[in-house]
Image (cartoon, helix red, strand yellow):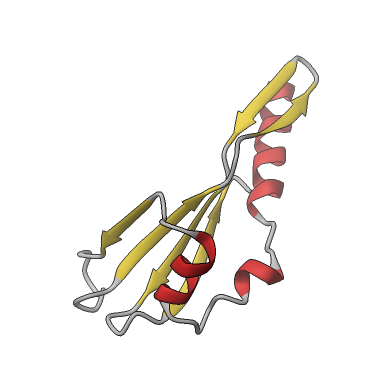
Length: 98
């Protein structure tokens, strides 16, 4: 029970990390991002309700890292998902397990 609570707190703390360098891509065109970082791991058109036609989700993955826990290590891969509008401008960014 305590180990599960500790793991939950570690994962929540990791999700709160924000990188000003990565956040600075908001407002830039997706082509600039791809030119600087290379091809994304995935680029998916957004089709959910409320998404503008032509909007996309652009995903980059970082090399796996490890959270060190009392009873072993937990492997984790940071995933950064950029959201670009129909005109290609990056409007937001979401971090997962960073």
